[in-house]
Image 1: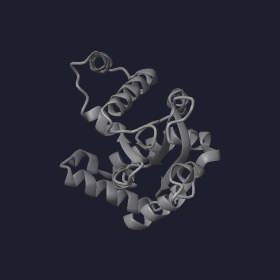
Image 2: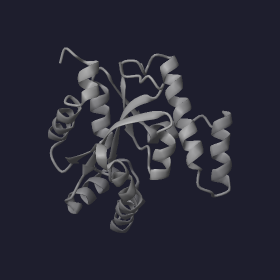
Image 3: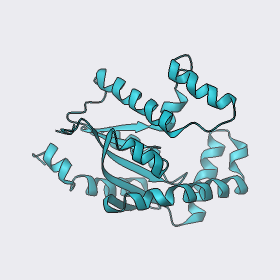
Length: 208
């Protein structure tokens, strides 16, 4: 059973710099039975701003203020609960693949009121040139010319590293380092080798 006795949802967290391919990996793994991919970025982009919680986000945006972590986690919980009600996500047998949340230790602490984090997958891309190339290609493909400049890309990577260093340390006892410089299929294999050996996966899938 993937849903814990405490009522918390079980989850694998995916963390990686822009361009490391964690979104791609999340989609691939989300197609595997017993794994459910949830992208916080996608959830934000599809937010209905007419809802009460959507209006709360808009109010902070209009004032030029950062959205409080509490509101972000509340929106996440609302989204996941709704998907459970619709049986898109089945908490009793599914493990969440979380992409884009948490983004800080403060968010992680709030999130752990609702989530049991089984493992943090840190998709590292030590080859900075490769990372820059990937980010530039994606920006150009999506028509975001301003995001394709070296200055913007370097700033995004620097911001990511500064904001997530403490988060990686926070989950040091449950951290798996994955080399994201490899071909996507090899990255997937490395991630799956960790997942299928995890006690929770073995418990939920005894036939394996």
